[in-house]
Image (cartoon, rainbow, N blue to C red; front, top):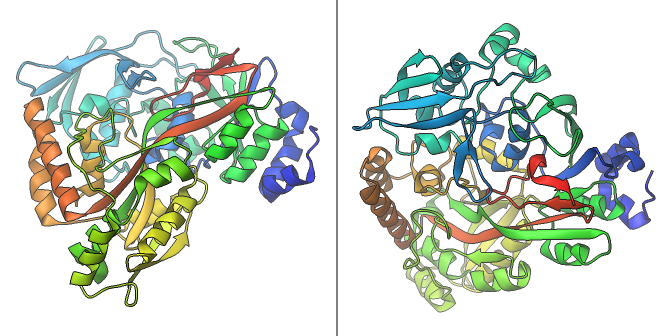
Length: 511
């Protein structure tokens, strides 16, 4: 096994160190046919269409390795053929049509057919099926198959339906196999059409994949891919520095700068669609006061956090639409103004002597400097009259609390919007019926509601810009930063950065 010094062994922690022993460090080092990734989250479930993990943007890197999506997506976020080769609407947008790829086989050797596509969409749209965005898929009905073309009626027009086919839960599963083995059987032995097949899985430890030699797309560079689940960022640094893993991601930026300068290591750090934001929930009385919400926003020096804490690898944002999103509006500003924050708090009877108090939740190590960012913000708040108590939780707990509308008054989260559409950023984060929303209010719902089915694209985008401006004026959420994603890897490799942030093994090649 690769020798670890005391610092590296301690950094790996109990679970990580045991995993390295189990694999034998020498075997973990990158060989011509094996790739080991120190990954930043665990894999709770294999089904990519149900449950909280299906809407976790980070896990999509694993799901895309095993399963194919209806529509593919390039690293620049543009859509590309997937299991569908062509798609579109009829003239009045009351129907969709989809051409299904021929000659594809499932991992079990059975033929992929248009019936798999129809069944997958209908299953995803079943409100009792467990898909977190079932209403998206339920917008299609009355499917007809003629050869390899599928047509369907638009029950409710959704301008983003084809974008969703390349996004969260947009995966095709095998109808016959799934019906035969059931949900439990599928979890034990998942079958897809993707570039890799599941070889072995140990929960909270690792996932080993084997190359699918019958894959319809480009041949992956590696025969074997191992995802080691290493949620702690310090441990991920130790993984790459010790040579136990070949690639890692989402490490502190100062460690990224240090590691990429070392002999034998390289790095890439480019902007991704992920943003850091703070949900505000309108459950406790303090958050019902607009002065408190707006004061919390104006007391945050985002430029300082981006420049100093994140070493320039992040861009401050003022709405949930980051640069590159379709509804991005640079005219909306929520500037750093601590004096204004003090005045707003004073108007509600608060001051540094009599501060407003509430809890804020955050992950620690899920994103670079997530906990430290919240620490810095809490320090800035304290200077104007806000005392916030920090509670650390795992991202899985965040999903559970958010779905039950039980988040703390404020809660940090990393929001991924790989398709860059306002419905999947502002819409799902702020619309009351969405299980992903923190703030729930009729005024906002009345503005957002009509936009879901707006057929005039220019009017739709203008409407979302108006929504974002209104949210900023009311202080219903705190947008913070658009991230760049740090990836460190052995110099014997070449990694293509993905605009979505999904570190897919197919984007790693031999240098």
